[in-house]
Length: 113
Length: 119
Image (cartoon, rainbow over all chains, first blue to last red; front, side):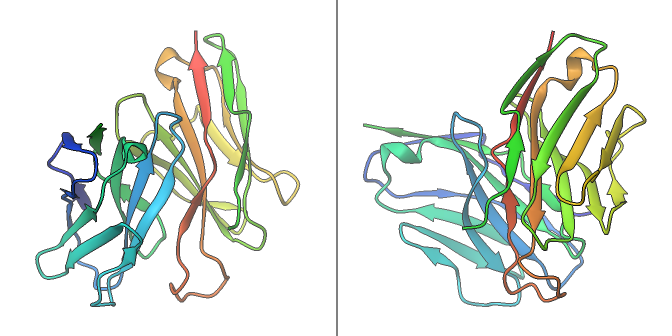
């Protein structure tokens, strides 16, 4: 069965610092998608970044980038120049061939002023 | 960006009552999903719907739950005889941007969620 593990329940950094959230997953599939979602206090689910497994290049979206290590089944999220608005829950998710999302438990990120 | 619309945003219901959560997915999408997130817990898959039929459901999705697409556009999740433990955020998701099997544009577009409170 596919699983997603986020080992950091909570992280806290100062504004403008860089922070990395870890995520590992387990699957026997070779082609899949990985996502990071942000969930602010409103509890809306907002897509931060996605990575196609067949692409070796790490995805980047402005201040957000990933370190995708397919062999190690690792998919970490790096947030550069962190801002107060980045404070939220962050969920790592795996999408399999049936397009269903498998979710990690989430990491609560707190950006301190 | 394509939008998935969910209504209501917040529903308060008495235990034992039936609730219907509504979702308007992205047009031309064939796959629809419902997820649930109990406060403070991880997101859980409930059910997937493809070509007007349930394609997969989790253990959570028991006889208390049903989904349908009554008019070809709205996608509903019905919870019969609600229980206190049904209190959660319910998300509708509509993945894919085309009907093809390529994943070039795959993304799970989420609605803003319905917060269900059972009292």
